[in-house]
Image 1 (cartoon, rainbow, N blue to C red):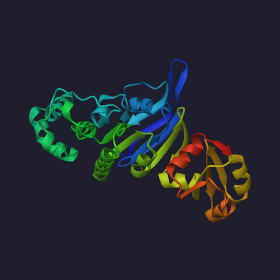
Image 2: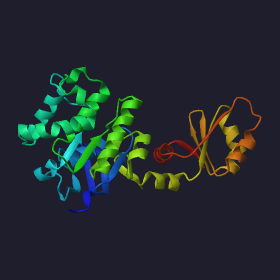
Image 3: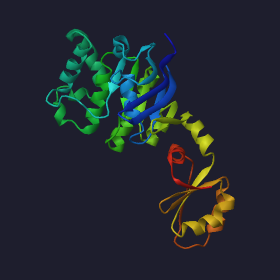
Image 4: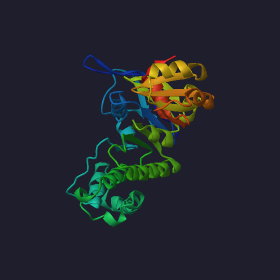
Length: 302
């Protein structure tokens, strides 16, 4: 089997006169979690739809599992977790899995054989005969994930899988995704949660208005674009503060009333600000969010 799960080359997509995906190219290795990271409107969901063969690109080529993305064989090897749950709320958990398995031509016997494993995976064993409409949001999301595994796919395409979940439910989904990666599944993950991307993804493609503006592992991107601790400063006159600390920082970015200072020697910044009333300072390690905001736009002082 090829080590390449997904290959996009020069893919472009327009809706009317609006360019949604702009000459995008990337490759995803088998067994990898590859993230598409960007704000709403960056083209993430459109890319997911093209991978699934639901939308045809206007230019470029897409292969999935070594096959054209629109081929039936390619789609048989893919599991899908859509952005919004589309479960049948009147059916039970078990019935939802049974109905979905039939879409893949599985017999009732085959489906019943895998349901216990899927319920265990989703931690829904005690809810097998509960009506889906009575489940919590986190339970519904885990059921949607389990349902995507009914045909034992090689590739999972997950579009904003934890949107709308509380932190506990989100962490439980993350734990289940790590289990899938450890078992050899390939995941393509669209998200706008920086922490989610940083925790799960082997590599990321950062998107803005359908264009790739950076690609690499989370830690490599943080090192490349930030590379030092960040001091957040709130309070005082931003321009006055900038003039004081400019010689001691690599870069200053302004977001509202907060200064984000990228400081190789944070103590020097603290010394300059010592004794000034009304300031709040937070020093922290750099994060993927710093990378994203640098690449996609804060007002920046150089």
